[in-house]
Amino acid sequence: MSRIYRCLGCLEHTVSRGFDTSHLSVTCQSCGSFERFVNEAVFEQFRAFEESPPASLEWSKLEREEKLLISEEVARRGRSIEDFSVDGRSTETAETAETAESYSSH
Ligand SMILES: [Zn+2]
Image 1 (tube, rainbow, N blue to C red):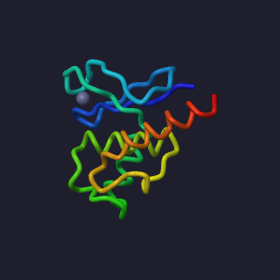
Image 2: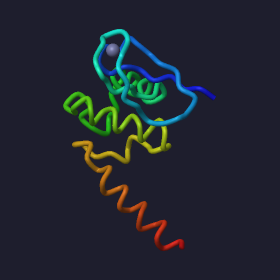
Image 3: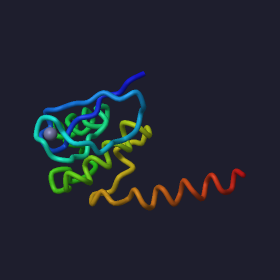
Image 4: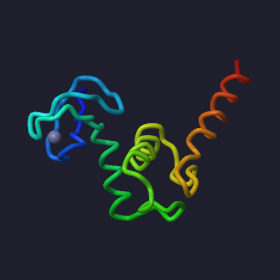
């Protein structure tokens, strides 16, 4: 099943790949620069948050990079937006918790 990836440089150009990953880096045929292309599912989540910012954090104050990271967690890992604190950096804590969890179950 192929996936769509969108250029973060121009947000216009998309490429299709036969694998599913969060993002990839290729030279964009539209803006001509070597750009990061983000999974369309992540980008759609990002756009949804842009249109209606989540109440649990100060979305508009986040860097785009942080927004994309959160969007990725929500869109691809099934995380809830409530898992993220106001500064959007609770991802680290959450990952540590996950690691501890899988540790004890083995
Ligand atoms: Zn581009």
